[in-house]
Image (cartoon, rainbow, N blue to C red; front, side, top):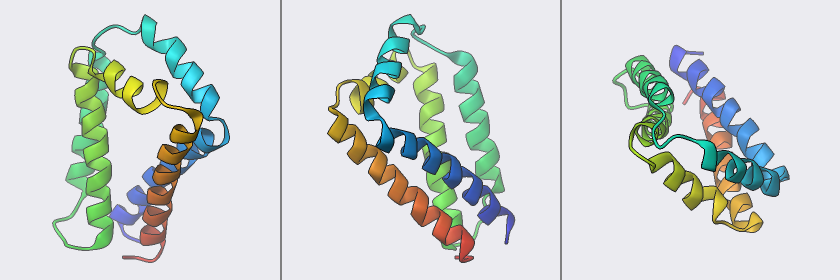
Length: 131
């Protein structure tokens, strides 16, 4: 198993655990995020730098090959960088959280997390099969 496949497997495992929580109890996620958002500052520079640094490290770990695992790891880099930018831009994290979770019905939240679970499962499959 290559370095990229191990990293992809770890990232997909974290995604799968998060999406499992969203599939099992979407109301709890909605309530938790809704309760935390009002107290959050407009910008979270520490979290933004963390996510952007993580995205950079993951991007540097991706070899310049055309295999499926490399492309899937680039998707993780894109998601991580997007989260970092959202934390740095004024109220962008709040808008993103409201768009994806707070203003959605439990069924819609389940669909979002089902899509994330499907992506995580595909990433795990690709990592384990050496694609």
